[in-house]
Image 1 (spheres, rainbow, N blue to C red):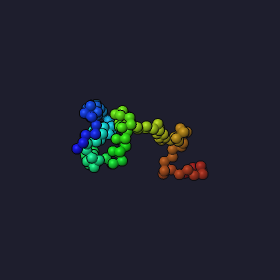
Image 2 (image 1 turned 120 degrees about the vertical axis):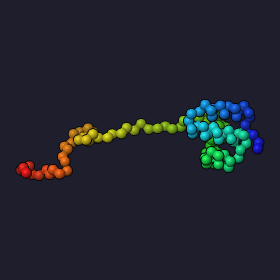
Image 3 (image 1 turned 180 degrees about the vertical axis):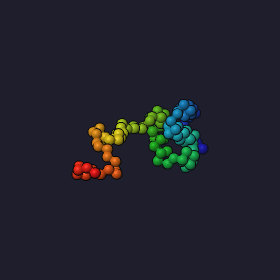
Image 4 (image 1 turned 30 degrees about the horizontal axis):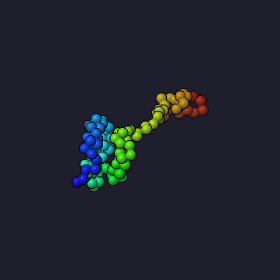
Length: 111
């Protein structure tokens, strides 16, 4: 097995791995550590349970931008708000009559 990264690079990656709290970022760093130590893609795929496509992307990012590219959070989230109407109102807040199902609204001439 031929080591692909220097001992210093591996040491920096291991330090980043130990400091990282995000599970997905740790997986990306772990991938580069295994690759840097000389493991083949099939072994990395088996050990980390990730796709070859992910291995390719992670190594490519590391080569281009270093450790910081492995730890950035790409999740953007959303700013949706739930609008749940209160009983007796519409979504816009207008009041609507609340009539039980067993009461019939007839001609208004009484029972």
